[in-house]
Length: 221
Image (cartoon, rainbow, N blue to C red; front, side, top):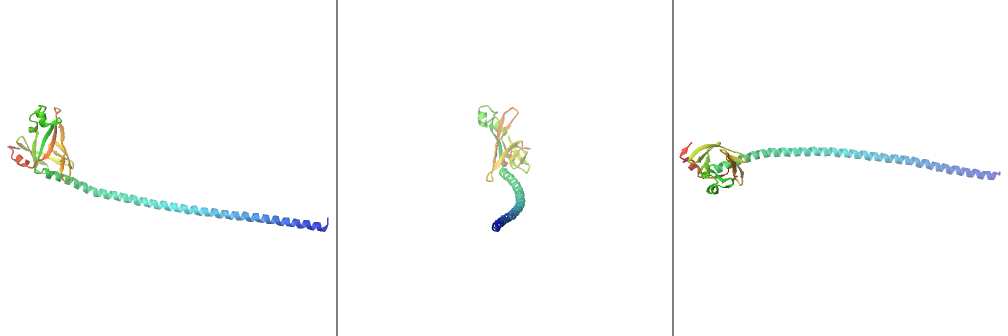
């Protein structure tokens, strides 16, 4: 083998080794770079997730405070409404009772208007009701004090107990429901059933001159 040929082979081998070294170096550099880039990316993701977690926790805390504030506000409103409504309801009840008392103070009448569902006069004319149904069961009266009324029936005057609630008035043994409209009481009729299975429907009305007739009754009990 000639010296020239040997030198050429050595040169080729050297170039080959240099190229291999360069390639290996590039591979190492790329590998190291990829490692650090990946590590940096993961670090950023971890930082972002941590930040999101903090934000979520902070948001929950604010929401909790908001709920507590809302609950307090709601409870306070309910308490205010309760404290405000109680006196109003009491006042309304007292007002209703006073309105009824004033309306009946000068006098009232109680009488049957229906016998077994028919007008009393018609039932008596047709002999379906006793002939004295209207006369014997009609009353005139007036309020005597906070617990008694004076009433007159069949020319005899006597006292009876009465009571008034926010929705009813009871005189003797008859109770009427009522409502207030423009400071004016409206009394509902009431129906009673008796031992012979007959029914009477009663009506309560104002009668401004009743006191004069009651006090002038022949018999005062």
